[in-house]
Length: 224
Length: 274
Picture 1 (tube, rainbow over the protein chains, first blue to last red):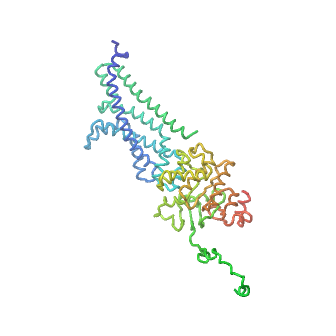
Picture 2: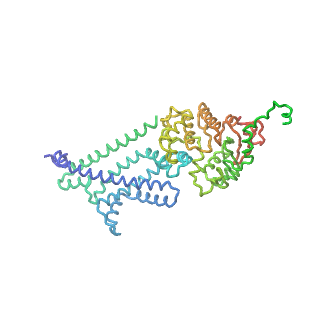
Picture 3: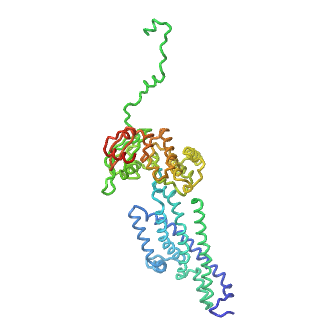
């Protein structure tokens, strides 16, 4: 038996299935949130480049509020605050909503920058052929913008995956929460938390590799 | 007939079929409809008046060449014709339809007006073939294989039959510009606008683009060409327009204007550029 303060291999092996379960929940929450975040972010990002003042105003307000407040506070408001106005959510939906709304704001800014990174001439050429604004966006601007924002989107996904650890405060049993529960029962903080960190790395490193790879793949067929 | 009476061997000549056709269908000596008619066009950017009372009529098959110093409003005029710029005042008719009317579907109008830009503006994420095919397939809803056949034909016409699967980044400037011409032609436009299409090209690449445009003019395409290529203006232009400070200063036969410019401003410009 190895003492507290040193890495306990036996304990580590015993808690592996629990950590794997926690990692799975984390991945699940993050994937759902990024999916909804992408939808929210695309719409808000489009609104951010819109000439329509109402769309622009609402989306700008949304982005400013979300980016100006801590995610933890947003989570607390949605889970503990909303019941005050009659909206009671279970932890998981509340968590997913909080992460989606938050990542949506960041993705909106990524989408805006991506759209603006496509030269104006592309839009003009598309319009001169008779495409409508939305057709030009869909066939010309978005595909090029997507390529430009892919690294940023990947980074956002990784950041969100790490931020999902904050959901442990509203009793969602994801990776970080699993770690804390093990610590509470084994009184060993060193091994479980290192295990937790290891599992986060096992998810984030392949993800960042994937981002780099897809970036290269998209880049090669075009540039020479 | 009188001679015929005397000379039995004489036969009156057969009536020329062309003559009958001419009498039955006399040419329209007063065509009211120009393909393109610009009336009293003004364009302001803020307080700056870029176009002042432009009046211009273009016939079918005519090649109009617009020259003038930079900042004279040539490009703006061109961009007003397909409403990439909204005119401040005035009317523009395409085949009798007022395209400045807010009720008109500008996307439908733009399908009838091809435009080629100084900076090519090819879609960088698509191959040459896809660049040419995209609009016919997505907007005109032409079947893919038919659009592809047509696109290949057009790319061959501009001399790029062997480059169809390359991306814009893999093509030279001259090749890109020829793809851009093919892309505009794929929509079967009635008039083509060329906005200084050779200005961004290396000198040795200018000719290949001009040759394509010359061929297009020979095929009877209606063209409005903003250019600094005086040789092209002289050789291909049916009419030359000299613009300066937002107004049409002088217009007429290219050879006539080059030889004998009437306006002092035209004189000055030509003396610098020729």
